[in-house]
Length: 459
Image 1 (cartoon, rainbow, N blue to C red):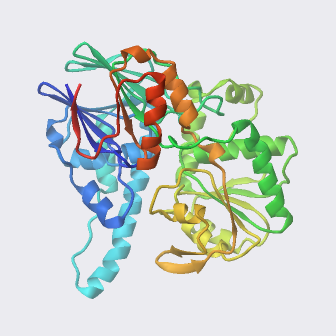
Image 2: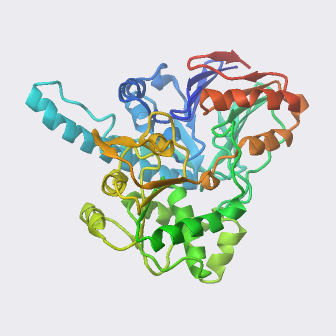
Image 3: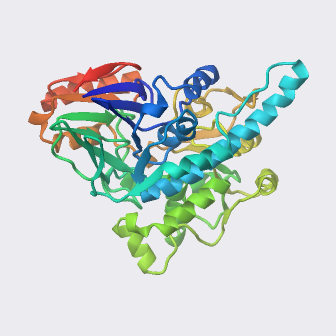
């Protein structure tokens, strides 16, 4: 049995891990790599293995860096099953269609200029038709139900990260391998806490926040209220770049509670993302994944994701109109790292005014506009044009759906550490990955490995 790390190695994006048992090949994740444009282009357009030889792909959850390149996998010849929870399948369909539309639109825009310069035209990585074709291979699974693929048996457990997220528990050749996907935090709203798996021989663990400690989530409502009240009082607007899956719904959920308790004024709130609107419908249709608090809200006939003054924006024209909205407001818009989408237009029109605020509520990867804003750089590029940043920037890691170092160590500490032969640290920038090494060894883990891209290990 071997595992090879083809993505998510010393980076937080493009997760892709290939398991081999005899002639059988199973892929864990098939995410899009996001980063420098040329590197992303080269990485996403080709696979370092033969897609047609892969019998199955198991996906932990519906974030684009975990599911975003499934259409390319099918284009390259994959014809196996893509195993995931039913909620993940519903969300992934929305994300992949949206990703394809963005790529088609980007290609059309770039090709206008390329034609003028007589350059070779750009093809989208995949089209909407390609995305829809990949859905034929999706298979929704329930938590704790076994699925077999050759000699491998899979169980999915709730990872507590986003709706439908899963830990992947694999039995093969008398061994147990646990892949965390993205491990969630305890006592977060909407979703359940992560299920504690106790027995494994090998652990493949994400460590996005392996060198950080989150603020207490119990303080998040008070801090969010303080930010809203401060900016509204000075007549400004709040721009919240937020992923369409989970983070947008979580922000709406928290603003709803603050409004109900009279802790913030009745300022207009716009969710400026048709994708986030459709994702919210998936949330409404899958209450079986909710935790007790969210279910209690439903049972009291209170809608978690709707309130007076909240508007979901569906058209580009209505999105553009928000830039002419002169009163204080809150705009929640994708993408969470400010790399694409309508949020770029809101940033372009808002960052030059001191009264406004950009609220960052997600991890900001290297080489993204979100990271440059988080670093509070005085000048940033948007659509290739330089803009002076005069607005305030607030970073709230408390909203993170990833376990921090303390949460990761608590999870490993809940396992039978004496049985663990090796822990692989993935989906983390180098500093975060290395920060996990010594604490894990102090817990009693025998070997901690931070793999490079392309590294292969015998299990």
